Image 1: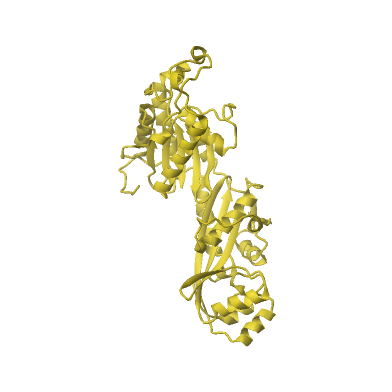
Image 2 (image 1 turned 180 degrees about the vertical axis):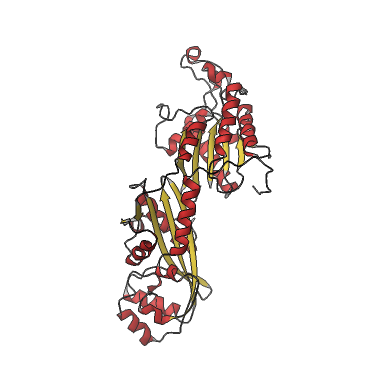
Length: 410
């Protein structure tokens, strides 16, 4: 899901260099125009769904900014408010200029407490309203603290100074949390960035699999290969269900390689075999021994199983994951047949201990779904996902006219 974090528009106190904190100061005319411009820029932003939900700090400068943005997007829901988005409390320094306060901050909210408040608040909002995208209107210092944490910066360095009505777009995914897509952009800067319609010139396959390499070449002739050691370094979090293990590893491998190739389209993939046996869901990956391969084939013998291949696309900080599933039915296999197949050596490095594109085809009674998904890469769907995702995330979309807000659930 997407989360757009926006600082409210300008107030007279901003213009005068006065700390506002929890004081309820309204927007000035410049601030109102900034909020309107931000709303217009967001008409072009590639949200995941038709209408985002808007949430603001309870202070009037944030609420007014949120309402003006909603008007430009044709959203007629009144913005929600959430106390976790309140500005940092400056205590007795509120309302004073730098010269007037002289470095005195009696009653200042502790920085760690403020960080915990905004991190926990934004995480709660994302989890509560997912998969609906959010536009969140907050304040300069509290947003600065949050974004500095994501950027691994110390606060008060000047590097994260946020402009009034500036937008930072974030991607939120479990279990990864937040990552920054666009940072501290004015309306004009965001429109310019979106209008570039950048298309990746370099592709990287995050896999050593020869079959995936052959299949990807059907889609795109030129790409490099770089393998990830994520599976050796990481453990699957308990928050990720076992049936989604392939999705986790596809993301882990793609994200790992994308750190070194931020301007390339990185494609990660992982395949797992799922089979119900004795009322228990078993997940079969690559066998670690001949004995393990024999156990896998005995388990699949005479049963239907599901092959789930997950693919993860990474490009310029953006991430998109999808998965394809294919049903496969095995014949009932004799011990002789299992031993003969293992002797071919095909079981090595194959999820479920068989290769449908080789001698493993002789074990298969029927298949329901994409054959190439079982091989290791659902190329027809992958091509469509890449084309649609790049168009949606990189190109300036036509500006919709504000209209009635369709029904949607929070």
